[in-house]
Length: 198
Image (tube, rainbow, N blue to C red; front, side):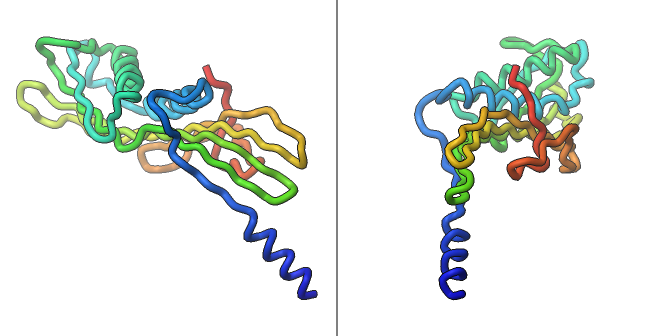
């Protein structure tokens, strides 16, 4: 009986999960880029830019803005503003000022392991932005919103069988409620929706 308990304890302790920040300059791989794109698209779709329809808009970025993700965040926000009828001003005068505060934007790599039975490698990304819309002349704050999205790529292996890697997305309403349809609940992916990267 003692041996069974010791063996069970050893297996439980060996089952682990770890995450580390991806390293290097620029994006690491196409997979990493896809995961960050999924997270960004999930976040920005909930941004409300109706106030900017027909307005000339200046963008300012603060927070955790790195050179390697500035262009990505700029394009993400600019595209959404223009889809809502705004005009992004790259220089000169503007009617509205949009402050994009980057709370989080980046990738992590991780792995989890259940001894003998299963291992999984994953790349995760999160994009979390606070967006403040101001009147350029008066400086008056007209709207504040926080949007957030998460993306993940996971590839599992069971007893030597390599599974096809899958992409997942997790979205949040401004209240924090998790959105999702056709939720994939396998491999501890509850709350994540499987998605094909575009």
